[in-house]
Amino acid sequence: MNPFEPFLQEHTRLTRRFFLGAGALGLGSFAGIAGIGRAQDPAAKQTEAFEQLESLMTLPDKFLDVSRGSPIPHSLSEEKRIEVGLTRETWKLEIASDPENPARIKKPRLNADGTALDFAELMQLAESHAVRFAKVMTCLNMGCPLGMGVWEGVPLRELIWRTQPIENLRRVFYYGYHNNEPKQVFRSSLPIGRVLEDPDNLPPVIVCYKLNGEWLSPERGGPVRIVVPEAYGFKSIKWLSHILLTNLAVANDTYIEGNNDVDSPMKTFAASLSVPREVAADQPIPVSGYAQVGIAGLSKVQFWVCPKGTEPRDDPYFTSANWTDATLLEAPLQGAWGGGLPDSRIPAKTFGFDETGRPKTWPMRLGKVHWATKIQGLPAGEYTFRSRAVDEKGHAQPLPRPFRKSGHAEIELVHFVVK
Image (spheres, one colour):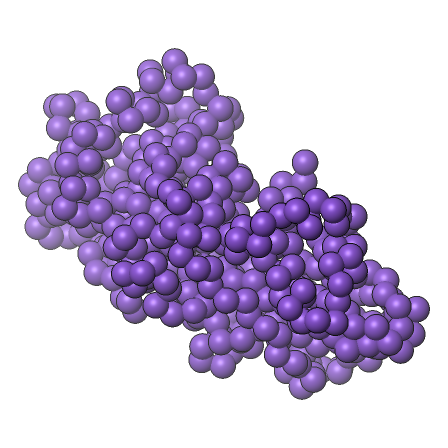
């Protein structure tokens, strides 16, 4: 199966209500073009309950997977995972000073002396410090989110304070289990300031043990992983096993080796998912897509259609094009979030949600949103379709950070023909 299929199916469910409500398109015409031109089953769609159309969260086993390792740690047998500490009963976390650039701490937590943190102690901390927030997990170099869910854990700072740091602490290094082979270790890091304090009304960096109310599966990095709210996936290390407190002032992330900007937070961008490749002249054209809402937020999604080959010259970001606003689809109602959440409801005291389970702002930063629009009928010819996001400060994609290695934000191009 196409790894993007669950995401596309979810998108089709979400946008179907919009096009039915638009009045100009029948169910059959939308079903025929949804999912980037793939054939759909209108009869099956007609039997789908409308209450299920608003699911926005991703089932934990439907996340796209970009795990590393040979073998990938989540593919290990149950016996092997028990042996190497990748079960809740056997997991241990060392928190120590970096031997090469030591921070001064009083109480390191080490396997050697039996003081390493175990899962039972983590759960004790969770009784008074547990945090939940919604986040889309996304890859720096991919143009599609891996999945969105409600992540639960204990703020990383709570663990660090228990080592009683004193001075010379500038960054936190961390890595997970990778077959006990040094060449396979996948590591990341954060400045200590980001760990101890949450800027810009962001959730804390967490030592995570649940996704959508379920214990983390091995595929999602369980039993315990890091989750950094505003960051791309390479910062949210899976199978967490070691934390080093260091006086080194620079990052040591494995992703540096790929010429990546490892300090770049998530970008806001939009892309289409349903654009017909061939349509009839003078007929309305339904188009839909999604937006990833990065650190800069999202104010709107826009689209632009022009005859093929008529794009403005010397304008690489098409700032002078005739962009038109699309419609952002509303947030799901409580009880319609999907993703395997209990009763499909946002849990109480989830960061960014009110007491009724509604988002305090929409679109939510660090999440995803779907959009749809209807293009008025066009005369016969060849056309290009583009979409872009505009953030809360008015920066239109790919600005303000158009560089590929700091996160995907390219304006896509889709060709279609009107006959």
